Amino acid sequence: MNDTSESRKTGRHKVKVADEVWIVTALLHRESPDREDFEVAEIMERARTEKVTPELRPGVYVHVNAHCVANRAPTPGRYRVLLETAPNRRRLYRPGDIGWNTVSEPDGRFMDDETFAGLFDGDALLAISGGPSATLEPVLLRSSARRDVLCWQRGETVASPAELMHFNGVDAPAIEARAKALLGL
Image (cartoon, rainbow, N blue to C red):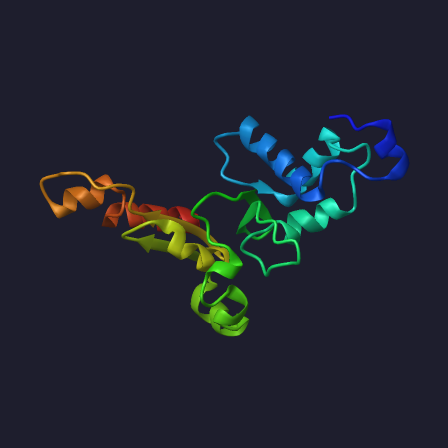
C-alpha cells in the first residue's frame, strides 16, 4: 500500500494504527483460512512486509498486544479488533466474542492468579461444554496449560442421547482421545 508524499513529509498517515493492525490480520486470515489464530510475531512481520505505511510505526506492536485486544483491560481507544486466543496469539474479533468490558467480572478481578493457577494450570486443560464454547474462553485464555475444548456442535434428531453425544464428539471415547492427545500419550 502506498502513502502520499505529503504524509511522508509530515509523518501523518491516513491509516490509523488500529486499522493497520486489522488490515494485516485480515490479510493473514484471508491467506490462511484454515488457521484459527496467529502469533503476535506473525502479525508484526506481516505489518513490516505489507508496508501499509512507509515505515512500521512503533505503535503497531502495542496495538497488537493491548490496545486492539478486546478481551484485555480496556485502553483509552477501545478498538476491539483482535481477540487474544492464547498467550501471544491473536485473531480478528468476531460478533459474539466476549470483550473485557462486557462481562460482570472482568478477568482482572475474577480470581487472583494464585487461586486460578491452583484450579486451572496443570499439564493440560480440557474444557467441555454442552453448549457453545464462548463461556469457556475466559478460563482457556488465562490458563497456561496446554488446552483444548470440546463443545456441542449442533442438535440433530437421532435415536438416543448416546448417539447425539457421539455425533457432537462429546462422548467418553472422544473425551479420552482428546485428553490423551493433549498430554502427548
